[in-house]
Image (cartoon, rainbow, N blue to C red; front, side):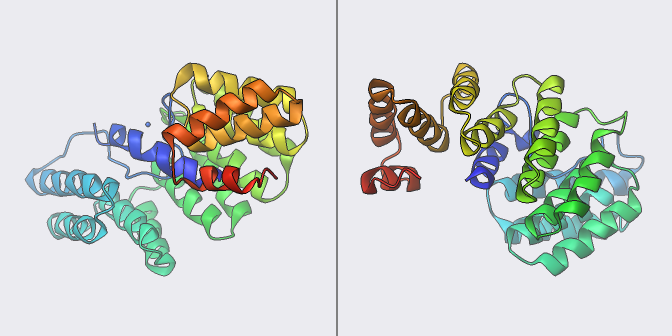
Length: 263
């Protein structure tokens, strides 16, 4: 579930890279825009096409995003953010070979760029290469020029959970929160981790922290409902169930509720 939540949160915050989930942490991967101004007219064209392509990427219009990235590279064949956009878009299209080729090119033309390292790490995590992904996240997080280390620590925590290394995952997620206490994806990840470990009061507290920061998604409501059920709080469970039915009819979580599948 957490991967779908990450995608939902990204869609609301990704544009900050062009000008990062929930509460200021654009976790997962996102189009990386170089902060420095274009040095010449051709690079300016490349930058403009890449930023436009990133908007189409956010809308899920992959074909147009690819076209804009290619226009960017026609202006500047070494423009790393355009290769990063190609990597992200091919990842969206479930074309891992092409995605990796373009991430590698982005890293070659902008070695050490933390946003690209974060994005490539997310690609690796989603393709069963979690250990490699964590190395990329740490390279990004420890880069003193990176303005959003909370993203990389959150992603590292998510991928450490895939490795069933809960202690390390929790350490990364808590570090993410130290960098950005309003990072709702890190909070949700900790809530899920606590729930899975049977630490239901802790899960309840993490969910409460999320609710103070944002309108809860279907995933958050479902986790809250199941947590209250485990704690035996029937009134709170019913309240969350009503919210889920009212606000997210037809969602996977609402269907699970209707089927009584709480585990």
